[in-house]
Image (cartoon, rainbow, N blue to C red; front, side):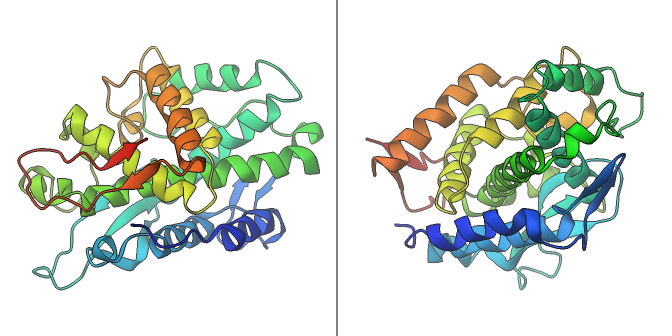
Length: 286
């Protein structure tokens, strides 16, 4: 079973997000996001604390390692020293920029309906490179009100939480070990190119429970997946978020069902399965 949820602690840190200084923050047209790369590292460390001890043994307590790169990248990374160092999740500064912007667009949508979809369309039609564009007209002071930025911070926490927790699960569910020989050396790549549908579903269940156990709801996760699913032509970075063939509407329905089951006490973690030839059924929802 998971350790007791650090609900009070996680809620407190979520509330403090909008108050932290701009160390490691994302600069954007019109203002600065306090939720920067260092805050993503903090969320990763909190996620580690709620994992089962058997899962923790396979992961570095400093769960997130960072990369200064404009392209959005998040992927599980294997240890490079013969198994002596547990595994981590690599996050680029570009990925933090991206989810800050998606979270901001979702928050702005509350005061300007249609803004989120406008930004999703802009992402899909972005430049040929792997650097997503910023949301439109970010210099508008209405977009930086306290109410909007509080909501932006909440969405960011939930997006970062689900993205990190899913990638963490690839370590303790055995997916990284299974596909280690197929992952390119020396550069990040989406493991979503390799895993099966069953393995993806197992990781989504695992990551959702891990995030919920840190008091991170699924609304931000649903918005992140919605952004990917709303693109008729997906850029390369979208594969770090979800496999190409995933039905996003069904995925988001499942997230809501997991959250409801969690609060009923019916979403539980089975012990990780050691075998690597078949994806484990990581969770059961009563």
